[in-house]
Amino acid sequence: QVQLVESGGGLVQAGGSLRLSCVASGGIVNVMAWYRQAPGKQRELVARIRSGGFTNYADSVKGRFAISRDNAKNTMYLQMNSLKPEDTAVYSCYARGSYGNDYWGQGTQVTVSS
Image (tube, rainbow, N blue to C red; front, side, top):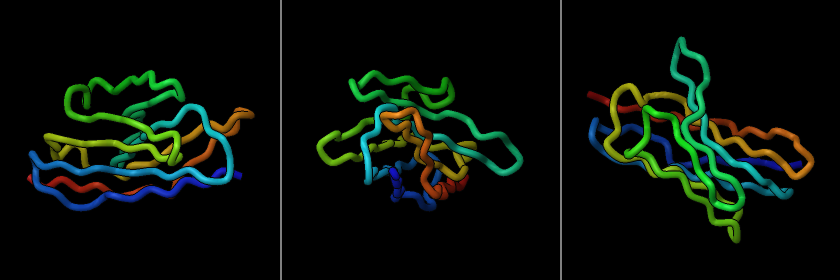
């Protein structure tokens, strides 16, 4: 059973930066991603990274956010720069296991003040 543990959320002023981390344990994961959900809105994909390093981003974060992973540490990162109030949300780590199972972290709150 894969477990995902996020860290790095918090409160930051607009224009600031945060880095989120997600550590995977208990199994092999292939695709990893960050999703977010703001109050009253649907959960949306922020960024995704495959085991080979291929990435894709939501249009709203392109040029500001960078996803990366350290396979040796089973850790995924999301560097968030030039944060905006509309980036405020609960950010959740997602991973797909080698047998196609979906796994989710508990979520970490990111709040950007104007």
